[in-house]
Length: 549
Ligand code: G1P
Ligand code: ZN
Image 1 (cartoon, helix red, strand yellow):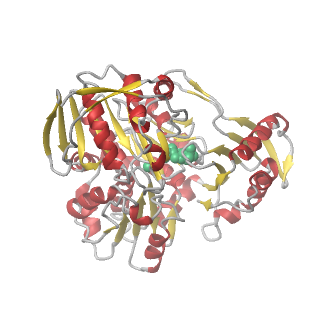
Image 2: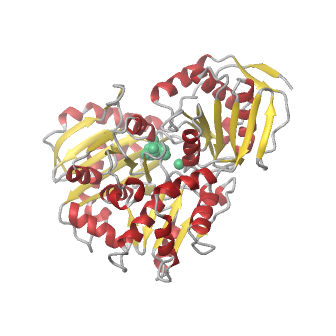
Image 3: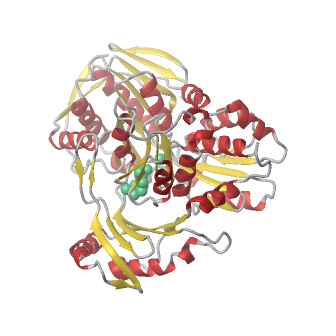
């Protein structure tokens, strides 16, 4: 076995998006395609000699092939040690946990998150740095510029490594350790939450839950934590076996793709709590009986109740939300007298704030919630937070429920109605034209009325990172209207086909109706105004969105 140098030519289009490089599997399968990107990462972050690297992925199609390629390349690039999840499995939160716990140089995570998997579906790769978080913009820019000038990469001529058994292998000068992907993460959760209290809740005859792993990476994690360590009855975790194509499903935990779970909890009178995760386990969908917890509200409720959870009882420093996320958490922060930061879309923007201890909690409307325990959003963490919260609240009111907790929150802080409309796979040039026209008229919108609603101000969001001073521009168009309402337009940075327009709408109500309160109805005037302002139907040729959350 020895190190070999392979000649290659650059691929255009290897620019990392909101969360790493995501493409169709078929694109990744082109000769040298993955290798080029991996070498570009190593060149950008190097020198790699003597360092330790975590490698794992969500188990989707091409995961096992890609891991073998990366192991050989990492050894040829001089890493001293590789820690690999058994069978190539690591959830994104677990990878972040391991990078931090073992103080490694970083990690390579293989996932296309909530995008479908399979031979004709999506694959992805991203690099997380030594803080456990997604590479910052400056690192991804370096990686991209490497992809444009690369002419060779290093690998080894040797057999694949057996990743199905725990143990250590030596390849060249590199130690490759196959580790249990779940234990470290599960131990960390036990250090944050009151497992005894949650256990007593789950033991109650009148408390039933269903956790849907959607045949994705969180199956083994949820089974170990919810069923084994917390004692929920067997079968509480459904679709628990990770499959390369996620069982043909769409591992995106929202009301559309997790509709079976929604029916399950609503039809079963005795079921109190349900949750689902995405492909790599960092997103969460939370449900109560006949009740959906909007992720924006979840972040606000978590912040308001931090003192009830052991890991946060000593106080929290601040909070952050991505710009399109509703301003529900801002209202809590203002009452608690802590700072609330507004960042561009993407978890990478929370990293500096967390490292500088400016924030404890952060979240995005896109089913992402997390805290300073790691540097990724964390689906199971959110579930455990809510279970711990329900357990705490039920000591005061044995009939408490998810619905009661959120309604109590709205009574105290008011409600920010929120919706997101996605127009998927639209023609890229039409999408660009729509945005160019919208940006051109931004200065003229103030004071004008659309569908009877007055525009207070409009801008193209930009962010100045308070820690390193870096400025990120062009992060979405914001229109603020009367009645504390807001319309946001942006283009997705994670799609792999055409363009995806995301339209976000929210409106505050300080005295919300607890019965007649469907957000689509409450926000209907704004939805029409959003089309009037940007000409969505005209530019996209679509009458309605593909997904509403
Ligand atoms: C989407 C979400 C964003 C999230 C990202 C990665 O990105 O909107 O909040 O951080 O996936 O999970 P987008 O496709 O909108 O660029
Ligand atoms: Zn994800």
